[in-house]
Image 1 (cartoon, rainbow, N blue to C red):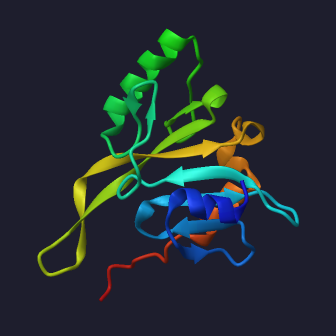
Image 2: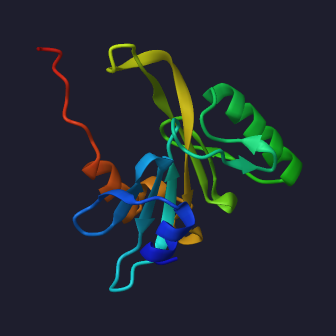
Image 3: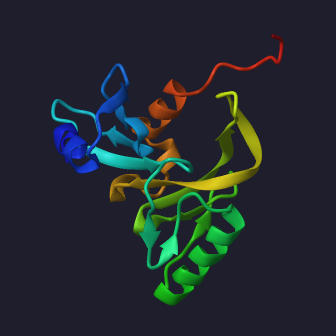
Length: 160
């Protein structure tokens, strides 16, 4: 898909775009599209945020915004039923190459009465869906590496 078709499908305006056009984040949708190189970049990866992302199901398993241990157990059950191999990444997260799926987990945040954001005590699942050529090592793929480097937050020293 082209970036224009992705924007139409997501139904949201681009809130942030990388300098090289490698990725586009779509406002409040919780979706980020990553594009392959070339003069006419095509969609190669979709990242769905743990919070604010759309519901995503695979074979009846809700993948996004849940407690990781529950999702991982459900995903492994689905994989057994479908005779699919689920491997575990170096970070301990499940990855099913045949489905182009990599799960991760992110900190849950809530908005406090004063309007500021605060971490909670929970982590929630997020998902990365990749094209077949990137599914074996999605985090090592150039578009994903650049996206992760671009959005890495400044360290918080705690000094105010």
